Amino acid sequence: MKKYLKLIIAALVLLVFIGTFVFLWKKSQPEPIIYEEFHPEMGDIRKTTIITGKIEPRNEVSVKPQISGIITEILKEAGDMVTQGEVIAKVKVIPDMNQLSSAEARVRLAKINVGQAQTDFDREKILYDKGLVSREEYEKSLQTLNQTTEEVRAAVDNLEVVRDGVSRSNASASSTLIRSTISGLILDIPVKVGNSVILSNTFNDGTTIATVANMGDLIFRGNIDETEVGQLTPGMQMKITIGALQELNFGAQLEYISPKAVESNGANQFEIKAAVHVPNNGQIRSGYSANAEIELASAKNVITLPESAIVFENNETYVYVIKGSGDNKTYERRPVKIGLSDGIKIEVKSGVSTKDLVRGPQVITTEE
Image 1 (cartoon, rainbow, N blue to C red):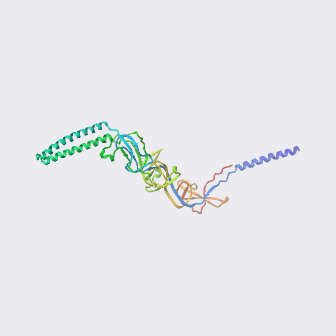
Image 2: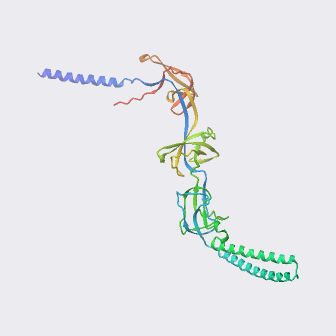
Image 3: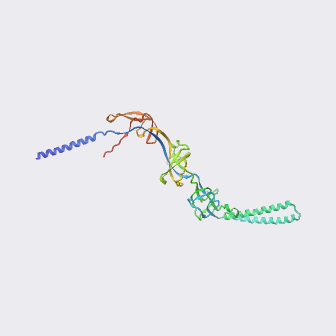
């Protein structure tokens, strides 16, 4: 019995040893190399680039006051449509004391002059009626009276403008009424009732009452790298995508390429502008971030291969054409002439046909 037990144990040990040896031998054998295989295909290749930028109005106008003062009333708010000449806000004038004093003095002097002119005219009229002075002298005194009377009106108007910002003679064109200079959409009203505002002058840009833009005339503004700008020409079509509007797409036409580069993150960038074809069903807002896809080059109905199947070596390009099948496969190294690439597929101008079978990169297998 013990003899049989020893034999069984010896057999088991031998079996384990043989199994371990076979396992290690198999693991030491080289794995067969498997390659992807491709048939060249006829197709189209488009080389495109994506430009990041934003949508903005072509014309965005800052409405500023013609006088300095305090905002007393705002009649519009951001998002409202306005027409040219429509009142946006009202301003109460805070007069300059020096200008006010000068205007008041001018009125007083004008009234003195008109009083004297009236006296002279009355005297000349009596003498003229008696035939003691000529008609020329009479008409000259009348002209002086008319001139001084008009000076009084002008002085009073000037005083009202300095003091109130408007005169009775030009109330319809009052500078206290801030009017839109264009028709469009109000993008922003950065002031509130009670804010002080100043007019634009040599030393100050003035206070912006409102920003108005024509949202029917939009442009895409972005920057493109110097390596690609040479392939652009005005008039090229672009496809604009706005992610904030559920991937809304619409067209645009390139109309401007900056002649001068600007440095951005260590790279030279050129500004571009494109006229946007505004869709009727989309509410596009100023400042939306957008991506523009533009086609730099294309090749239609050409032989294509995955770029991974091309071997680049010493400024030459090759492919390996498969001959035979199964264990009898051989690989013929064949030079090819390539063309346009989109980063995935590449145009093959000569060297292979759609009937050939081309070796691709090695298939990477993972062991479980």
